[in-house]
Length: 382
View 1 (cartoon, helix red, strand yellow):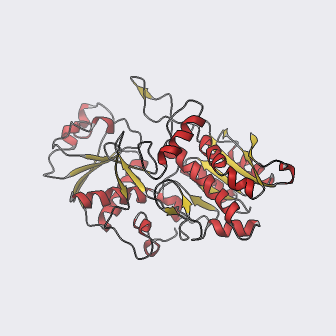
View 2: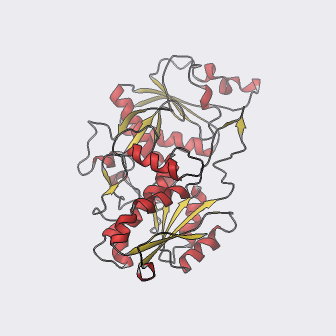
């Protein structure tokens, strides 16, 4: 599905910007049918709304530059994904915003490496996507390591330096726990023990599915970190632990790209505009923010690049000259070594922002945002 969302009068003479968008029907990360007591654990809204909002926000600059935007794409099946992406490229799209699982992002980046398109990963946080070093891939989703570093900075600030780490059996949970362990090691936070929990009620696995037993028998600790991508186990952990300790990670204090409770830097206005535009008046999620900022980055490059051609736009998008306003208080840009967008990370509960990382006191020789995630000196391509 394609539609023109911005353009001045006399748009036939305007310079057209074709922007692609792709997400999956029945995305396995967001099973809307899975719920307990009618509680959806992983709901999914239509993140295309974030792209549409970015185009609307940029309309004044687009009009001033005599540009029109055609947004092409929507949810497709897994089988149709590559064909649909190639059709977008054939139709002239130089940028495609992706709301896809990591495996689908990696497959598209590989298959489209022979084209001139740049893909923007907005919802897959896996560090492995960054270290794969796809030249045609940028990331506006924060990496696992970035959110882990944000949590660790808060622990150091609070002097909570002894952590019990819990994770589920799925590989995704183990990867998140490993990322947190790497962040902890960099800041000399001690993970006193790592334990795996089990979702079953099998009495033979009581030491893994009973919260009191999972969190007990390890001596003292300051805080519990839990990696639980599915979300079913972690929602019961608080207030049932062997020691009365705060919980972070998948529940309690959570590290996110965006949260509706942010009350500074123009965030309330962004949230209000999104709610007005969305079909069901829903609050802006971190996934919505990530597609919004991806489209905003591309359109900023089109309107501000000194060289108007495709190469000039791409060079500006990837340069330090990009000073992107994401309503989080500091200008943002993409890291040249990983394609990852530098950004503040919000540390939030379900209804409040507790802190924003980088936290005061954590410094970097060039850009404090680079205290979150793999810095250039420690980054290597797989």
